Length: 85
Image 1 (cartoon, helix red, strand yellow):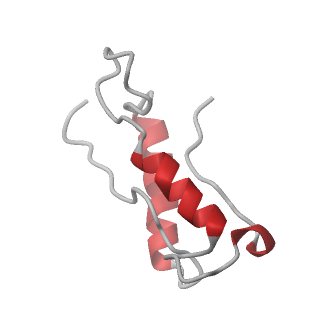
Image 2 (cartoon, rainbow, N blue to C red; image 1 turned 90 degrees about the vertical axis):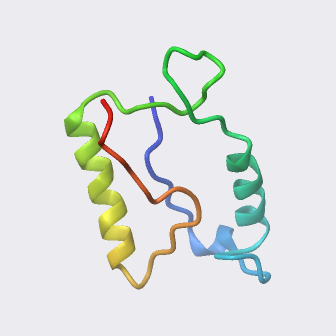
């Protein structure tokens, strides 16, 4: 199943000057930078469209709440678009 969010405990996240955290954050961002986002018909795409409007709205809600929270920092993604689909 797809992962739409990730919660990392402070004890694992760490901090060493990397935006948002330490070694874990750095490694996570390096891996995410290699993820191919694209058309679901292209099997080399790792991340594609969500399955339906309900899923889109749910994920958009997560993003909106994270943006509104002073305790959250979005390091990757954080944008969505429903203009196609």
